[in-house]
Image (cartoon, rainbow over all chains, first blue to last red; front, top):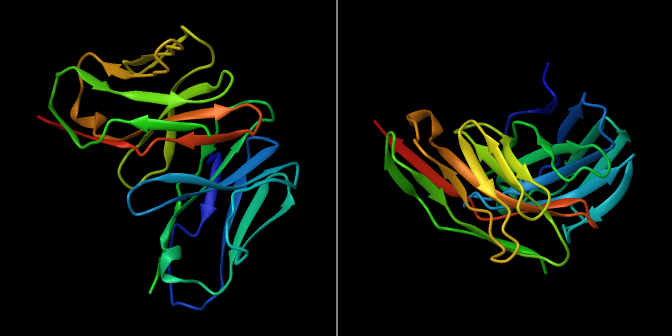
Length: 112
Length: 112
């Protein structure tokens, strides 16, 4: 069974479009995250949610809007996509109070 | 703010060679420290962790010791295999913010 699953794995879209990436975890964790990995492999947190509530928003443009319908899901919606949004986006989860995170396989977003 | 610095790659080794990847950190308080590994085309996997000073994390022949006095968490393996070829990320978790801060990653290539 996949612990943290993201869909789609690959996403190619044109500038200006709106797209969503879905994430689900079946680990029973309370905290979920979105991380962005740029072309140089650098990883940085974007958002953190705990029990559906936003905990961290790391100065991400408001074109990015996370939504957590329940604590097992954290989706990422991106409006008006730009070339600079091209990256790999990773969803992750962890139990509350536990520092390590478990990552999904990533979604490679390419904006053309 | 908190940060992680890793040695730049790529690191190229022959099979059965000794591996060291240096990692140092800057943090307030007492963070937990991690090594994650990313195999080609895959997500991040937790390789090992240490949660307090002098702890040694180990897994799959890799090990790292939390050195508070030198603020370091160097990754070592006595005999690398071709299958160890991947990107290795050092990370810390500030308990107060419940997020991971990553180093830039070090690519390891092991040749037969």
